[in-house]
Length: 103
Image (cartoon, rainbow, N blue to C red; front, side, top):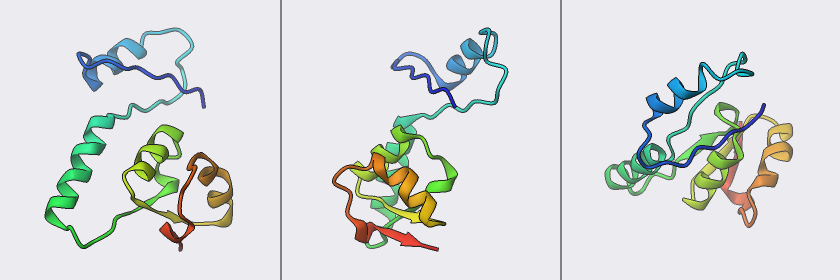
């Protein structure tokens, strides 16, 4: 999947979607990640459930940007298979292996 990154504090997710749809070469499905929203949700989690460590299912979104962000926040990872671990944890430098659960 081709990854295109937009970095703008003035564009909303909706603006980025509207800019991307008419662009030639974007016939395939795509997704937009709002990193600020991830950060807000993590903060809310910490405030409401400070003793519960979240674990993110890698298969939900394998974007290196998302995985690196979550790792930097200290979130654990749920790997459904050894393949998930091998393929995606390579993006997570200095990641502790005890923060990965296999289900």
